[in-house]
Image 1 (cartoon, helix red, strand yellow):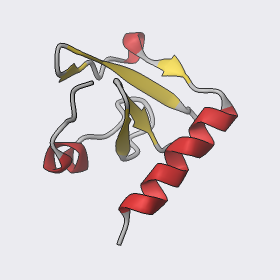
Image 2 (image 1 turned 90 degrees about the horizontal axis):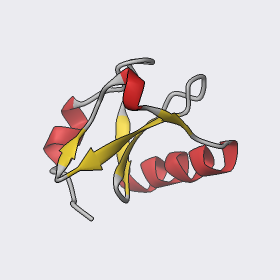
Image 3 (image 1 turned 120 degrees about the vertical axis):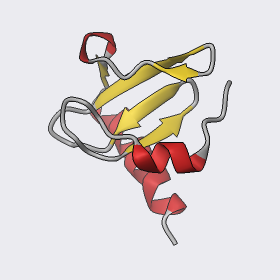
Length: 73
């Protein structure tokens, strides 16, 4: 698993919902509850294209939000 730079993640957003993103393993995940999209990371590069997005199940999205809560001071 490639760990993306935290500063890069702060600058990125979901191209569909324009929401902030967090990394979960080999995926960059949107924090937008309406779209629940995640984008693959390939060879250390996040592929932030709408056609590459996969919709997360609600339980997986809940884990993303939990990670976001833990990351905030």
